[in-house]
Every structure is written in structure tokens, then in C-alpha cells.
Amino acid sequence: MGNATLRPPAKAAAAQRLIRAAGERLTAPRTAVLAVLLDAKRALTHHEIESALAPGVPVDRVTVYRVLDRLVTLGLAHRIPGEDRTWRYVASRDSSHGPHAHFTCSRCGKTVCLEAVATPPDVKVPRGFLPQKVELTVQGLCASCH
Amino acid sequence: MGNATLRPPAKAAAAQRLIRAAGERLTAPRTAVLAVLLDAKRALTHHEIESALAPGVPVDRVTVYRVLDRLVTLGLAHRIPGEDRTWRYVASRDSSHGPHAHFTCSRCGKTVCLEAVATPPDVKVPRGFLPQKVELTVQGLCASCH
DNA sequence: GTGCAGATGCAATTCGGTTGCGTCCCGCTC
DNA sequence: GAGCGGGACGCAACCGAATTGCATCTGCAC
Image 1 (cartoon, chains in turn blue, yellow, purple, brown):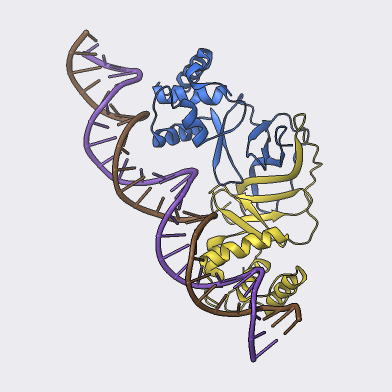
Image 2: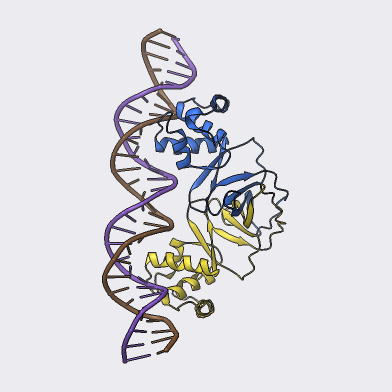
């Protein structure tokens, strides 16, 4: 998952580029948080993000929330409601926001994005309902818990 | 959604039957809570459940949580993590726990179960992962908010 | 009717997340 | 390169959903 003190500089540079490209002000917290997300192989909770960047720049809890919120708004990240009532965040791999699938381990809570759902979700909704976003979550055991 | 003071006795009777059939002790809170769920046309939050049964038997907040928890364990109900970080509960229509789909209105938060999803659950999971349950959530606008 | 494991009620606590507000600093302008 | 203004940050207090501990009560088996 990467070490905060040794976070690849490439990720920080990429983070800066993305923030700039979004027309946002470039600040240390934003760079750090986005770099953490880009470096992560799975969805991270707020707590995980916070502790991942702790050794470097100390960033306030609230600021992390606000940065994440902003990143989600900008489309640079998206967040997943978990079974444990906490948000998890992932950097958006690219702007293709097709029907998204996630896998959550019911033992350790680890959450990963599943690429390429082979199923065009033709869901029947009641008359008058307007579907906008489809979330597909698979619960089960991850490789290490299995 | 039914009125608490005039809750159909049929629902209370059904609730009692289900609780009994599950080999559980029959208590007023359990009957009341399950009756509320059976009577509901959509998924209810803890708060909604509580206020739905308020006029009749006053049931402690904590007890409602515990009863719901028990009902979920027994398979008589299931709960859905919402975008607003609160659980919503629905009585399990029957024991067929196929891939389940829910619709959540992003404006008013109302959540309903979608029957009959044409979802062939061929989701690709990473090697070593063991899928157990599939949740499909559709976000959008409900008929009244649309 | 009696006993007891299990259920309930009450109070206090935890915890993820949010809000208010004063200060700081990024980035535009001159 | 100095000045400036609005947005971002940090701190502290707050909120509400959910959980835990414990004493009391009760469904139900005998």
C-alpha cells in the first residue's frame, strides 16, 4: 500500500498535475491526500488516509474530510458507503464512469474496485423513477481472509 | 406506509407467527417492530421505525436496535447501508435471497426494494476472492421527487 | 406457580462526520 | 517583488447514529 515517508514522488507529481488541471488551488494537504489515494491499491477509509499521511505533513482531520469532499466533487475520487457505516475513497482511475463494482471483504473490511463488470445492469425501476447511478457491491472474503 | 395507531392486526399476527416460527421468544417490542416492517412499502431507517411505533407501545431506542439486529440475524429482515450513513431495514419478502437490488432517491432518501433484477451475477473477482453476497444499489430520483 | 435464561430499559459512551470561526496562504495584480 | 483578497486550513465544539454496561423484568418451560 505504500509507505507515507517513502511515497513515490511520481504520485505527488501526478496529484499536483490533477489538482492543477481541475483548476484548483494547489496546497500541501490536497497534494498529500490525493497522492495517498493514487498510491493506494484499494479503497481507503478516512482513518487509513489520515494515518497514511501522518508522518509527513500533519494534516487536520477536518481538512482531510474537506479535501476528500472536494476531490469527490471534482470527480478525482469517488466514495463508497461501506457496511461499517464509513466512507471509503478511491482515486478515479479515469473519467470513464461506467457502472461501478466494488468488492468488500466481510471479515477485514478491505474494499477494492472491480474493473469491467461484464453485466450491463438493465435494472427495472418502478414507473416514474429516474435512475442516475448504479452501484454494485459484492460482499465476501478477500484472498488473505479466505 | 400505514398508521401506527391503526396498524393492520393482520401484520401483527403475521409478525408473531414469524417470530414464533424462528424459535424466538415472543415479546411486544419484537412483534411491534416486525409488524412495522411488514407494513412498510419501503426500507425504513431506525428513526422512522421508532416513530412509526411510538403511539402504541413505547419501545426503547436501544431495544429497537437490538430487535432489528436480531431480525436481520434470523433472516426475517435485511439492512441496507445508505448514502447518508444510516441503516435502512426491510422485512425479507421471502427466503429467496437472490441478488438483491435497491433504489435510493438521492433527494428524499427513500429506499425501496427492486424486485426481479435481470442481473446475471457474473462479476469478475480477483483470484482467491470468495464472493458471498451481491448488492445492487441504484441511485436516482423517485417518482415524487422527479 | 416458580425459576431462570434471555430480553428490556436506562444512562453513559463511542465514533464518524460536520460546523463555526479566526487565521493563514495561494495566486492574481500591479 | 510587495500587496491584497478570497479561498483553504486548523482548532474546538458539536451532532446524531449506533453501541455498551448493568440492573431489572418477563416469556415460557417445567
